[in-house]
Image (cartoon, rainbow, N blue to C red):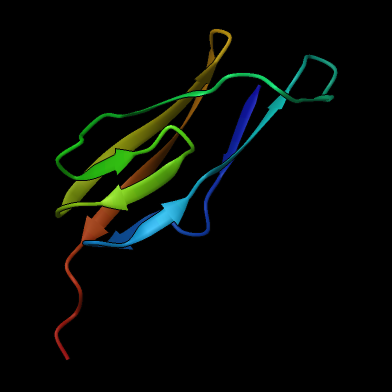
Length: 85
């Protein structure tokens, strides 16, 4: 499995957040040293780096996917404008 976690999935434009990915085998044992491929469903809203850092670019939503050895998991991020004071 690929288990993903992020401090928050609701972002403000220009925010960044780091996703943590934990890979586990069928027995629940943590796997290390495995390659992870990161993708964004909507790079106009949020991009993701090769290390899982998400950068919010504009208002909307984007699904970030982490894939390793044919197994994937996703987090949906919602991006909004900063509230007006």
